[in-house]
Length: 84
Image (cartoon, rainbow, N blue to C red; front, side, top):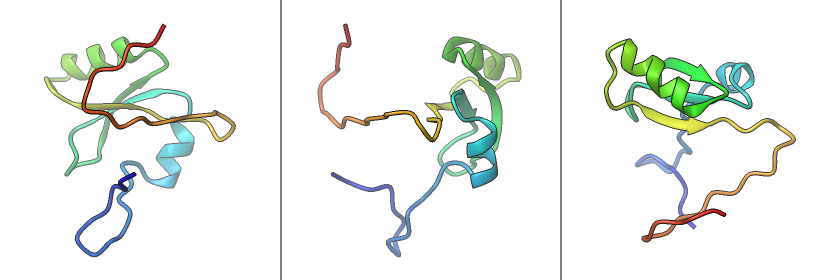
């Protein structure tokens, strides 16, 4: 399993602790992997993306911010996954 680290081995976080608490349980759009500015957030990922597009961001990085009690798994694969 790989970790999201920089050249020095430091773990990279996409959100500050304050933002992680603020947006817990929501889908967040940020400008990109270099600029972690939050441009929209919503409990519905489609609404979050539509809001970002309305602000002029055509290809934001979108992800779910888990709540502290959420059970959350991230799967890395080279093939598409289908959840049923």
